[in-house]
Length: 166
Image (cartoon, rainbow, N blue to C red):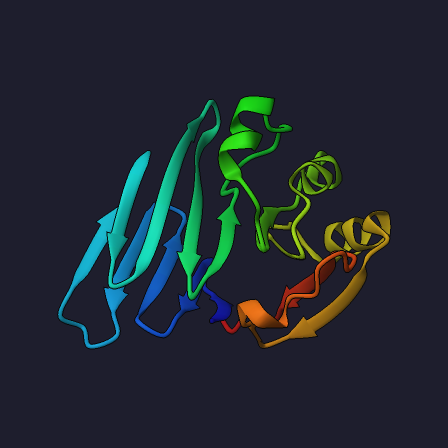
């Protein structure tokens, strides 16, 4: 699985298809381009072995993507901590796509993923403050590749900064 970020859109490429996570919803396309589906709200969907679960919150939707055996959670526009009910619905998350805001550190600690990819920050100062406050190891990459078997249980979370290609 490979994640990249460009023009305010996450592109998640798996073995069987590609998921485009945009501010207005999700588009899943099969690798051979014969099947696609656009999603914008709560519900459960699957296209070409990529599944998406959309959960409604008071601030909008949260999406959980399952690609190549990995669970990726996109918190979209969330700025408040998750309720215990919503948190339990997320389940185990491998990669967290986290909007940077005043409560990002608390939200990140709630979800407890192996990797965190921050986005939506309003400049380098806001990002650097978040990175410093997190206390986690940071790696800057043009794209992030991961396989389920590469995850080391009990390892501390790591922040991945995707260098946007605008």
